[in-house]
Image (cartoon, rainbow, N blue to C red; front, side, top):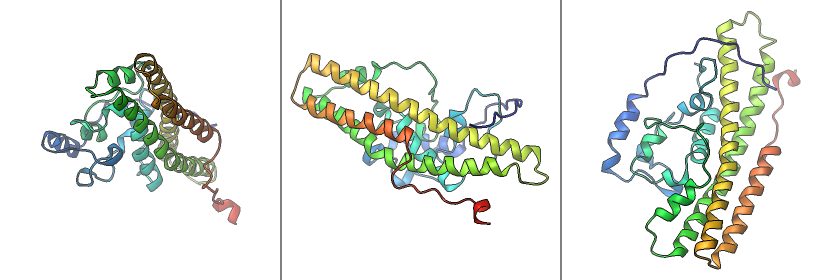
Length: 257
């Protein structure tokens, strides 16, 4: 259980990085995304998703942490973005602007499970089978992303538990450093929780879309899509309750003494 953060005055919203604005200006000139909707290497920069932890924790009466992100914390944000962002917002002309946070996000708005289906049916596919292929690709992309995200999340949570325990053993700890440490822990937990929430919503959206496809344009592909969707749902449930199979807890410094 995380310690509650002390109530601190909220800072005014910070301006986005100028680099994000520069990247956004390039959107009309090039195709921004590559495989799995990933940003092309020429447009990638370290820290492009650093804002995501602050965004996930927005609305809480605390300052964002000013501590530098660890490698795992930065990777957590990079991996989280693709699982939070809607599949239909990938591969768009504005995609890079959203990656950098230059185009606004509202991840805390009301969930509408019909939105994915609406986008799927509105798209100009030449045949119904193409819609089945699209939902299949989106589900499989999510399945591919899950292991690395949850393994990284497990490492981040583990080291944050050690960090929180260490606060009681550090002499003359300045209040500001304690507040920053707790704020970073809260940001990490909020981001992991947000991804879990969005994954559950994605499963619901995919299932609603598949049901509409079966009703309107029934095809044999529906059985395979349902099988893969059930696989995604099972993996989400497993990763949220158990550590990833490849992760092994590292001993703490205290235990090594």
